[in-house]
Image (cartoon, rainbow, N blue to C red; front, top):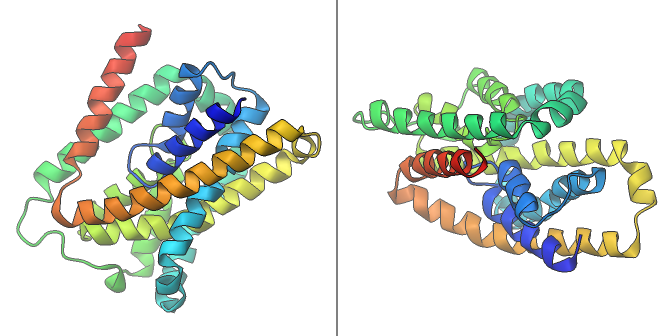
Length: 260
């Protein structure tokens, strides 16, 4: 992997990690466009650079998090189902879903359809989206965690799963987006640590170039995530998620056509 490729993938990671469009899916597509083979190092790179994106969210919201103990407790409850699924099915997910491009595209499209359905039939009802995270029960926190656990499959989107179920529960769009940011921190850090443990031999044998591309990718992810998260918060205050639904459907259909 070259420095340019690492920079490009880092930007893609930061731009897509916190949007409901599946960063993993976009990284896989971008890697194919750049001619990067799906090796153990490239898979590790995709996980490692998420640390840069997470750091951006931490810089933006850490002050709010540490002053809200109740929020952190709810996030801990939401994290548990994902941790269990990720730990038990880590290797299966990487071997099965990462090798089936058609399945990823189909999942990508179906989640887009769900966004359109939810926005059209539920979110347009008067006063439906009125709950805030301050009102969240532990039951809701657990259900959100179960939804996020489904997002271990490439194409679903961790942010997309969290936002969708919170919309279905009647939470405001901005609250759903911010909660997905917060829940991303333990989720992505745990995934990165698990992958680091399983890839420690690979990391120990990493060349100077490989270490450089890891750092460049992480820095690019940090900068792009910082910009996109600030934009996304402003976006959801005045817009719906229909754009992301159509993005998934049109983009997925185009990919199906290109690889048919």
